[in-house]
Image (cartoon, rainbow, N blue to C red; front, side, top):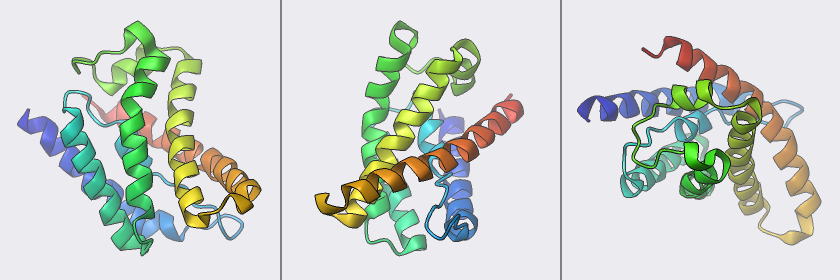
Length: 173
């Protein structure tokens, strides 16, 4: 169990630094940033119970807020994505979902269909981005802008996150 927490700590630091130092300044068309730090939530070990996962996700979002000076927006979005992750996993993977956490993320990737993989990634990314951009605008008056930014940033994030997850799987023992 200690090795799992060591892996979580390494990923925590790596994705905070990557997102904070490199990808926050990556502006496509002036306003679209890939949020590759979502890989931390997407590949978080299922063995760790939900309370610890929520606390770690809160700290993760708070650290990202400190880097990006976003006043708690990342914290709320990452907590929402972390909370909805188990429900999304059980909905998409059904009986294949392992609530006890005996399977690794590479088992989910290698033993599931392409549509399940895509649906899992896309649903977590859409939940995160919608909460982030809705809290940023904080008004239903800008709902078309929120949806536009959510879809455009989600596509960019999906490309980067998929690439990083497959690189992580290739390097996983």
